[in-house]
Amino acid sequence: MTTELMRTQRRQRNWHHWIGYAAAAFSLLYGALGLFWALGGAGFPFGVGDEELMAEPDFAFKVSLLAHATPAVAGPIIAALSALGAAAGALMARAYRAGIARWLLPAFAWTTAVGLAVVVQDYRTLVVVAYTPVFLIAKTFFGWPENAGFGDLYHPERLNLLLLLLAGIVWGLTATAYRRKTTGACGDCGRTEDERPSALQRWARPATWTAFAIPFVYAVTRWAWALGLSLGIDPEFYAEGKEEGLWLAGAALATLGGIGAVLTLGLIQRWGEVFPRWMIGLRGKRVPPMLAVVPATLVSVLVASAGGMYIRVVLARGGVTAETWPLELPETLWVVWGAALFVAAMAYHQRRQGECRTCGSV
Image (cartoon, rainbow, N blue to C red; front, side):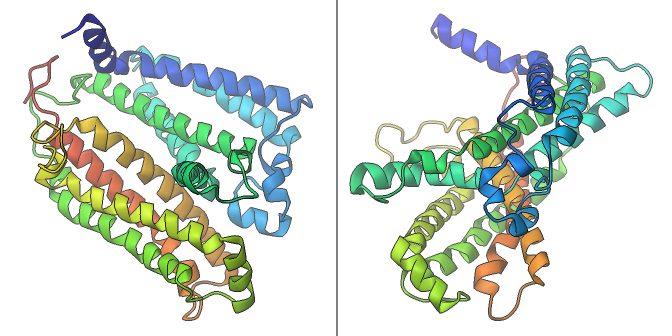
């Protein structure tokens, strides 16, 4: 084993030592931005500063809970919450646990994690992540779409949401690391000496099959639109979308979702632990657990956050009807998809941990 590889593995095993400081550092930097926006600085990415949402202001609040935010009000709030985050992150990194801090700090961390990764999000973060590979393939090999470039995909407001989602994940990891430090669990694997069978393993299979099935509800409707069936869509709007290639793009995204759904089954199948025979050069080798856990966790957060937004939109429109269900129902199930995929990914990670090099637990 090379020295560099050993250093990389050591850094990975020691993430619980520095993750709280990373959360604190992000809070400081974003808090400075909040203060900058409050003082009249440019680039406020929410509400009135979100040009993409303000193009349809009547629809904006249905999409984003921050659609009415202004820099004069939101800026100071961001700065204040970020100051709290900087202090909380540093305290959690140092495993401070005096008094109610032992309960208050993780509550703050998890609230921040959910707030950043789910509550303030909308569909655009998923659009950036999901359409990037579609765009790369379509542009590189087919020169399509002709009148759109990567600048149309990577709006500053969308990248800001992606940054906040990643920060939410960091806060979730900070809370996890803090729990391990304050409960006597191993910082690397999270296990204790009196470890008991986890409920995660009992839910692994039903969660995985749920995460497998739901994407196909979405995919079937998008494939139907690409094939010329205007299910649940006004015929005039369908014709416009067909001319713009909208339904082909949706079918491409649905195909990626279908592929991801099939790969989800690897979380409970043998080929998810050992590369199958047809993978020349890799067959028979052990699948690195993080190769499945990281993308599954990221996708679970992305689809859950987008699903929450779609539920708000559907409720604002009066709910799902027999005529509009192909257009409105599939995305409302994404919250369930995200939750199921997260449970499946965590169960897979727990099952694949093996012997811990730090504490020796198996």
